Amino acid sequence: MGWKITVDVDKCTGDGECVDVCPTEVYELQDGKAVAVNEEECLGCESCIEVCETNALTVEEV
Ligand code: SF4
Image (cartoon, rainbow, N blue to C red; front, side, top):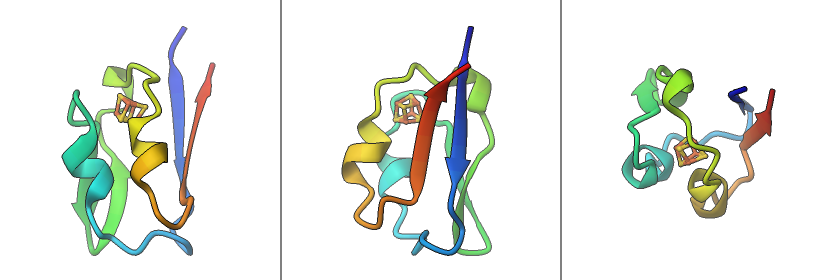
């Protein structure tokens, strides 16, 4: 089992809050948008969801 991360690029402002908060460095900013480059490292803690001001992130168990 793992976690599937979806970034709504229309909502993402690229403020980097998810990059800073994620304990396992899942995210990276690319061209001003968050990209889940290490999705397999996700713990499902939902910290990124809590800090995202535009609700651009979805984390679901798969
Ligand atoms: S749910 Fe937690 S571990 Fe997963 S990407 Fe978000 S902050 Fe990182």
